[in-house]
Length: 248
Image (cartoon, rainbow, N blue to C red; front, side):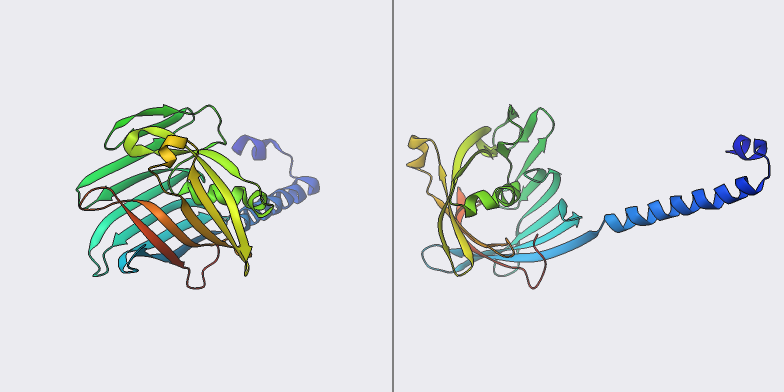
């Protein structure tokens, strides 16, 4: 930069070019700052027992987005009395395939999932590495919501969607099918089931309800990814409250 300005003759043209260049540069920076909008969204989920309707636990979500794209999310799982059950920290490597670390209080354990361009590394009850061949057909944990949003119009049209979902405790991909079952009162109801016939006998279907206009998840009913102190995972009816926030 020093050579450029010391060698240039001090003419009217040179003096005019410098302010013009700086003006364009500042305008570009201003446009860049406007284009990137960061926001933090907080929402909760109340998980109820499928049979008794008793409150099992609550989820407290804190989601960071840039231009509507998820970046990081922390979820605190708490008992009805406010005691901590678990914490999950997610980093969205891609919206449908986040990296995450789940720390469970009882039973005390940690589960870590790290995706990259070739596949995903898993440290859980079992550990290992799984690759993927189709970049669009694999989904991890909370990325399931964003996978649905990517295929929302297809589901609205009445068509089913199939994909591979990570089962980290078994270090395997699980083939799932998502199909629309009803549209009523501005809501889209979906059913999620296992494509493998034998596994479908032991894994119950999951039901999800979305608001069509906002595309918010309103309700999740079925097996969750949260371990129970006595073994296994909770099955729950989870109702979500966004308290006026925009779509996460």
